[in-house]
Image 1 (cartoon, rainbow, N blue to C red):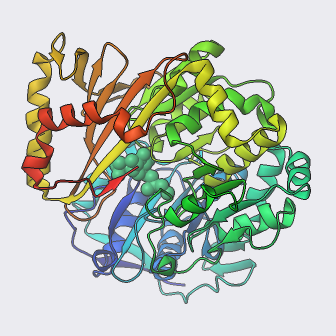
Image 2: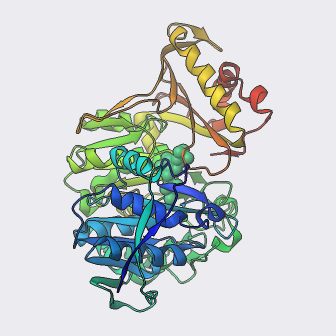
Length: 544
Ligand code: VG1
Ligand code: CO
């Protein structure tokens, strides 16, 4: 093997967003684009000589090309071993587990998650650290800085690795070990949940549909739900990963999983429906006649986690991203445990999990997870739900209603305005930010008194770091909130996310339609920010 040093010129746009560097495939296909970015990552790290690096992705278009490049660059930079999922496949939570389980130095996760794939779709690369979680901002900032001045990268003149063959191969002095992507992850799940009780539930006629959306969770769901838990064949649909996700949009929400949702609302439908996204870290949960809002799901899972063997001793604390509803806060209060509010993105949960201060984390964007890995985990959430249903012997609807009757209900919705002109979106946020100091104390709309209005700044209680400008929040004295921020995962223009929340006490009305219940807040948000007028859009692109 010869190590080659290839000269290159920097790209100006390699700034990691909420979750890694996401770009159009055509951007990634530019000469040295992948090479520059991976070398910039390695240049920002220290002490990896001879260490293990994990690699895997959601199998989307360009995964196979990028992973071979990454293997050569890792060898040339002095890593000792690469662990890679067969076919280049590892779901994001499985990659996190493999990093932790084999005590790797870190990992490269090749995914653009819920963004569409294929030659005209998106691709992404994310670096995870040794705790299995996404690199914190200190590292992502350093990578970006390095990418702007990079002038060479190292690679080798070696041939492609056969990623279809389980076992060990060599790239010069570096070992490449191709592993089964499912085995270690499935074994971890068996330690957390009561597989016997769930198996018995399926055996007695409980029916579910799991939509893998032609993405990475197919092999995991077939193995765990059908093979290990005995759910009938056909429980998993769209279970074969395809490079363009069958032409679909692998985002498990009510827009892209409408068919399954509608089926669950009929008497003939199964008892339980679930789905996961491109890289397997998100979850959609629907019971018969009951869609569970992700924010509610976080609260419900936290309140019931002790029913699963892995959490029977109770949970240490809960963390949620700032835009996520405060439903979980009420659970933490009742349990007398810590509650943390963090900026959007899983990288902010890592320190709290490592310090043992929280056990369960979640985001309104259908991400929930625990300290078993350092990423959100779609199948984990599905299995915890199944475990809770088996233990409580109640339907999802009954469990949700009982929860609201105890804690009250946080009506919640998110309105996305996608592919908005970036300059217009930026100005909209700036102008709203400028209004904030004058808002507290004012009575707005239908008798809503502003309690606070700020641009969220997070102070990490573990490492003392500060992250400013994490989203605008306007809170009212009755617990309602308006939150607005720009997405950090989109690849075209800007995506404006408007989050709305209203609290209804335990003895209040819990049967209102969500959009109607939030209508006054939706109106008020539009008055304050001028969304319709400035974007020219009459409706959001997606409502979740
Ligand atoms: C979105 C979600 C955020 C999530 C992130 C990555 O980010 O809102 O909650 O952590 O995607 O999830 P943004 O910046 O677009 O709002 V995934 O499943 O795309 O890795
Ligand atoms: Co994802």
